[in-house]
Amino acid sequence: MIGTPIDVLPYIRGVQLILEGYHGYTKGSRIENDALVRGEIVRAAGRVRSHMQNVFDSEYKQENMELARAAKRCMEECDMLSEDVEKAPGGMDHAFLSGQRSPSKKDLKKLIKHDHDVIEMVTKATNIANSAEHSVAVEGENTLQFIKQTTQKVSSCRGFFGARANILKGLKTKKK
Image (cartoon, rainbow, N blue to C red; front, side, top):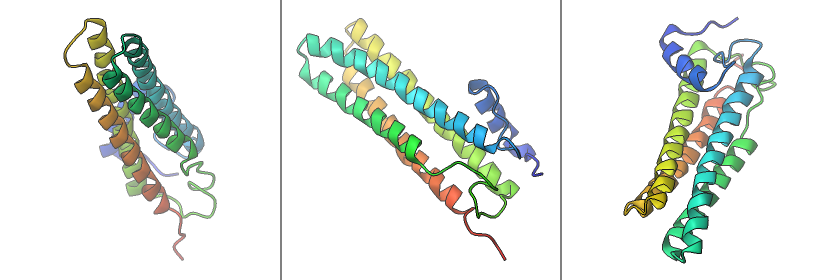
């Protein structure tokens, strides 16, 4: 059984604050932990989308098409993030996927830190989206800026999550 590296414990604890039942890819819980991480990213993207839907509805009714279009672009980015997460490689049957070498502590550390960082990014996007919705409610001047920041953060999260495939790809070849 592969133990959990001590220097990655802060990342595991950070993810555990958000995901109850997360154990950092210990043997026997890899598939469940992978599903937990993916589920949280999709849920957070859904929260961002919900905030942007509210902004879109409000601004469309007020015929402010610039803000409505910006909110719509952000919603589309959220949809693409959710789709990317749902269709990304994962599963982790044997070591991670069938036919792969067993992951080392270094591999697990990299994956755990990456998951932590992606969840942190999408959580920040949710907070910015909440600020955008609040800005609309109080008729703030920074609404467009908040929407664009949210879109940028979700887009960055998409790209960063895509790098997860490279981490998993490194596990695909068995060393002979």
